[in-house]
Image: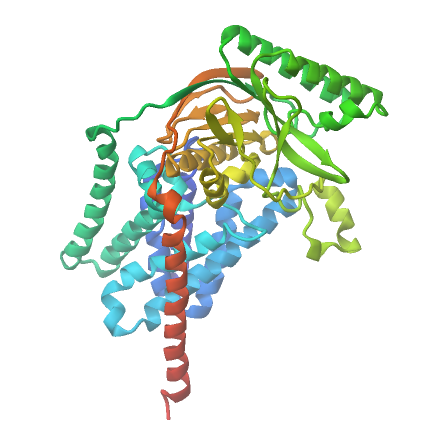
Length: 519
């Protein structure tokens, strides 16, 4: 191997290692946010060294290995799931590194002084696009590495997590430029710009404490229930045991805090559709389970939010069922964003050839919900994103604009058997709370059951792996607004569109040179 090729591989591995350290992992349980600020330095230096064809290969390798390191817990679905998602990362990163390399080689002279900014756009745009479409996957976004830094959480209320990613990549690009040129003096103005932006973020955060807010929040008492049952349980005996355990934990929580107004059980806490089976005695044990459960709920003075399968006609949904002590029956929210190949099978891949794979992946085949549901407790409104729906900021924004004042996430994180996966999921809830200045409470099966305030601070939690409960009071500011609620993803969409336009301009010049440059 040539020495130059060896250096290229070393740069790639250093970037991967730093990216891995920046996110929650077995080495750093919460991730080490510092490494995010240097992780892309080798990546940008690598792009300037590679030929265009080689950039595809190195980008694909970077993405593939990053996913393998970041999400080994995906293998709980089967090795094919981990390899498939790794290929998605490889696809986006190959384009990202290629575009950076292309920008650096064919950028017109008049844009050369701004190249250190322009080259971060493809990284941002491709990371953003990876969170879109039916294969959307939000884990590993560089901005989430700052989930424990209050100043950057506050900054996310302007442009979402993408504003944080922008700052991180900007600093990385500048440091890569300084290292490549071995000249600090010529880059002092750029360094001053980056430093000023970071300082502005901290000043923006401090303004919360320096300027009186005059808030008069409403207070809601909640009890969050957590059980550690295996998510693979499919026997009626297991369902009966889980139902009794959840009732026992609820009684203990109410004994600890009788004022609890809202009781939350996790996603699919009760797997059988107990509303359906309560009305249909054909399955005796499911019917009895359902009747006892509904009797238990009606005997309490608190509202209940319970994750369960829900049947509507011939369709089955992954749902959140809300029982108000003042109302009969239940209100239902059906999960809008389903996990592909686990909760639904894409219609364009619905061939007999894949039947064996469907069975191996244990695909449950739920129907997709089509509406956002806002629940009401007292004078407060809330919404309940299910499982990884809290990783999709546009859905949370839609809920917020429809009137939600706080959010209740119910999840089953037991399947991953990974502390890193739980923390990564938690980090996204933290950002959603900060982006929309709204409390997030989470009730999980073997996950991070906790309370997150409107600034993104985790104010209470219980350990994973235990059957337990968390009683807490949350402060909810009615009609809270942030700039991000108003503008949404305008910032990141503008960067994505600009990247495409700039690529087309450079491509036109590239074709012109190729066709007419030599005569």
